[in-house]
Length: 633
Ligand SMILES: Nc1nc2c(ncn2[C@@H]2O[C@H](COP(=O)(O)OP(=O)(O)O)[C@@H](O)[C@H]2O)c(=O)[nH]1
Ligand SMILES: [Mg+2]
Image 1 (cartoon, rainbow, N blue to C red):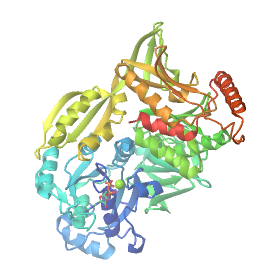
Image 2 (cartoon, rainbow, N blue to C red):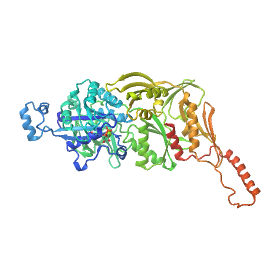
Image 3 (cartoon, rainbow, N blue to C red):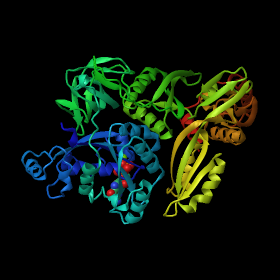
Image 4 (cartoon, rainbow, N blue to C red):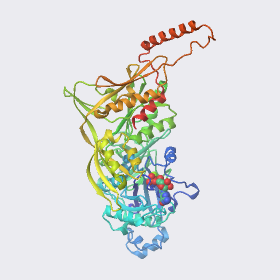
């Protein structure tokens, strides 16, 4: 295929600005998906994506685009294969050589999934940057734009949802133009709902986005295939299929290939394209995006960012990208220990479609054996646990999410701790460090005073403030990641009636003033309830947890103490009265002394049980779940 006729691009935007809906219209206009198979946000294929109306995974798709001949001369002048305009028209009509192959990658908008965006950007030359004309530029618009620019992608600015009665097309176009330092005329306007502006957009894609760069392979290696893996999927009988962007040469079925970093060799069982479902093709050549079926079934070999090439190839690996560090950790335990193996297999399977998931086995006294998992954010955690439950039918207990702390002891040893139950209780701590976050917030002016109070509550300080032309305020603040994870996003949405938006990146660690907080039930600490909290909030958190657990824990046969402990002291406590069994129920009327005797006996028995009951409380699964929710409030 002539690379001059390929355009690779990704759609990026803040969440809900209409990416997937615009992709629908592009698929429709190019005839990629026949009308009867069309449905809303057709590229959101996971059940969970459809139910929640959000995109979680990037999706690549190939389209064939035949520009209409009546459009403009510029259509033809950019056709690099033929210089004479007239012969070009003749040729186009005869052999249809003005057809273009467009490879589109739809991406998620939520910050937790920005790793998907960054990988997509490595596979393309251009991006469609959408801004909802009813909303204006949002925090994630800025983050995705910065990522695309740093990759050297050509940006096509677009205002979306122009059919909406609330659209402020000119104003938002001007805002976007200013952001990109271009003239407002360069900003396109589309509606993914009505399809308005989509033809113009297709023309702009061909005109503005450069064709794939031809990599300068040395003369000896010409023709040698090389590609970058940006995603992969797994199927039972074919093993792992990698999604790749081909940078050199040609991949074919039957070739002996090799993963550079993993050093693993394999035979290409099939090569193909996304149409949008996998469709076999004869070849995949430089500039194209497609897949290769590897037959590899073991986990841990294939990694995104690795280079795939010929077995005795001479080309060096392509620059890859590092796997992002998890931001929050939580433990996942099967409700029934018999499911431990199934849970391990399920996590391994999930990792084959979600390369950012990490986990390791651990065991906790009360909950048995399970896995400590690292996630890119709280939504990522929620999605993964939801998928484990649904796709693998597992019943799970998930512990309170936490960030990591670097603890240096007086002996000088520095350890990264990402399980509160392993955080030193007190004693020989020299210093504690924790990750910080740089947070960008865009908010309507009405919410600023509430926001300032909130920033104070969350230990944030402002480094930059700017007023947008529509009056909204953009703030850059720095705060401990721990405080960002303490429900900051939900509170921001609530104080701004949903109008404020947020994006963040992780900053290096700084000194932290935090302490461990344990919850004890019947005088035994429950490791799953252990937390690390700001010293200044420990009393408040302790009371909150004890109160909450008191309300949730079912009564036991004996009186049960619920306590919070920090720094070796009990700082909050409540007593849960015992369940009262009706020991006298069978005595009808009459003999009061006998009744008293029985009650007396019961009292004694309970006292004994209080002794015996130490640490023997069976905490039901839903109590764990509700405690986790409570801690995020
Ligand atoms: N009025 C209007 N609504 C739209 C348009 N495009 C998308 N929407 C709605 O906006 C919401 C988010 O759309 P979606 O395509 O999933 O956004 P994404 O998160 O950027 O992929 C959905 O409820 C869509 O129905 C449009 O052009 N006009
Ligand atoms: Mg989407």
